[in-house]
Length: 281
Picture 1 (tube, helix red, strand yellow):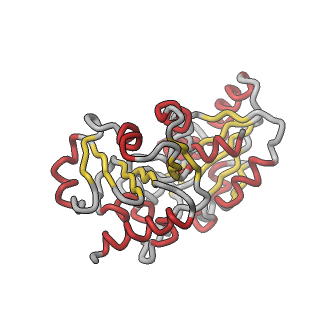
Picture 2 (spheres, helix red, strand yellow; picture 1 turned 135 degrees about the vertical axis):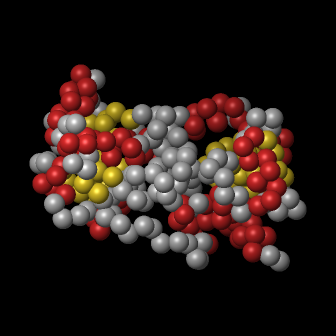
């Protein structure tokens, strides 16, 4: 049995142990960017496909991968067709494939960190109650990926105001005014380039993209909670971004959002994941 077949077998064993009939594996990572770092290439680990867009579904008996027209040649070179049905996502809806392939009332696992906040409602409606979507607490790929690449260790780059045009303080105050106008207490920000712009920082966490892997909570008073690996913070960071910036480890997101119980937090459902929406609800 080759490596790819062993990986599919491990996922099927995990499905059986967790009472699930299938697992959805999108290309996106926790930050929902098209381009992701090597350590978050879960779709590539499971299927071998390294394109920047795609989705796979593994059931107990079958598996399929869906890609767009950019990758019809590449996917056939990288993915074992004896393990995965190779389908064009424009012609073959993965929702329809699940309805045709799975039994009525099957349970399909999904990692809420890897899907947009508005995806769950749309997918549930499309499945018409025939299939149940079940959020998983831990992704099996993260459990089985033994040789996972380490994350980039470069520290954040501090971008001078002569390039940014405005200080982080001015930017935060301006956006905070909009939060207040919306009668909200804070906005949860997940888009990486938005945080890079807001704090006038750049990074090397994603190949060919000058961003850092992080999340942020901008308060209506302009203060900001940055959820990032603290080792990414360089000397001079707090002088650069200005006052009222608090750095937290990513594991503290839930705790900080829980502290907002009874308050209103803005969330962009197109750029934020379902996990963060569920926390805020």
